[in-house]
Image (cartoon, rainbow, N blue to C red; front, side, top):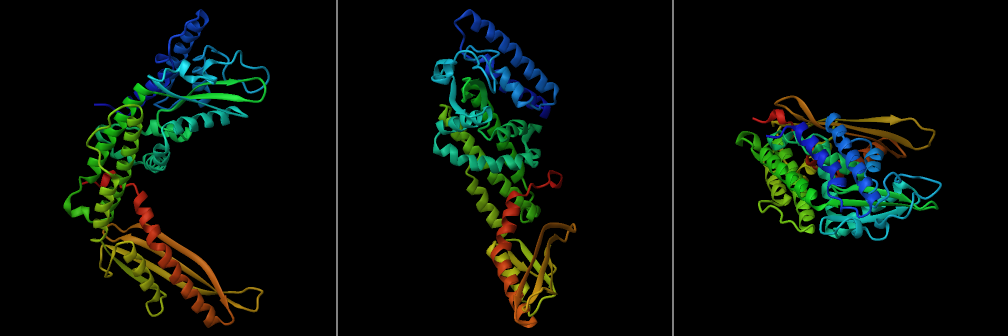
Length: 405
């Protein structure tokens, strides 16, 4: 069974060694020596990563150690002045250095090194087509969930957080890396972004395997706890992870690998989440209301989000304080500030699940008219935004593993 640190260290070692272990062999004597130096530097980088508890070394250091893949070791990373030796072969023909049977490679250029690297990663992503570009939105949501603690639900105590963190910092696909950079001595920097197909296949299959275990853990809910906000959050997270698995499967397909057959669509889990939502009654209690107008607005918003409105003895209670105060301004009109202070509470634990606060003002010729406008504005605000913001919050909520029973 893999440990968290063991998996992270292993993944980092593979990621950093991919730059040297899989590079096509050099033909000239100086390129052989450069390749040896590169192998030593990459191995040292992998060891340093393991010593650092699984965290990668600085981007500059790791990328400089990858230099020489085009026969120009020691000449990467130049930012100004003379050119970094002769133009590497990969600048115009990356496939001559990175065999397309083994790698996916793309070149980018820009006015500085950072722009060149960003453009290279963008060009690499474009190779995978529009489907992968659309899937980046899915992986961004997934990455946010993992970095916010979703990895606690991973099976076998295995973690993919470091690989995800690296992709987030590079704003690119998981497993992509900058393998070499070159400055032409004039005004243009070049960079080559590479994905090792064999390493990508291993990494993405492992991520899918871990995610399947995460989904299994999330959806293993006792019947007594399923129809709750906790159960709802679990199924929303399962949907996010399932979406990510589909995106990872698309990457595998592009590099010629067959994705696992047991993948499910995230919409299946969202449908289950919708069914759970319909079973959850939420009580609404408002102080400072007039004729039940604010309570009715919240009830309408909750219904639009799929919840049932229950009595004040329901497990979940939306406790709201509504107030109006006059605002003195140097203006002939009268102004009223309205304040909505609401908390969605789990009465079984006393925990505030979702706070909601609105503070705004309305004006008119008289105090009564200004108050009426404030009431109408508050009602509209609640109806238009509360249900959506609550649903968005629950869709990104990371359920606490300790609550699992």
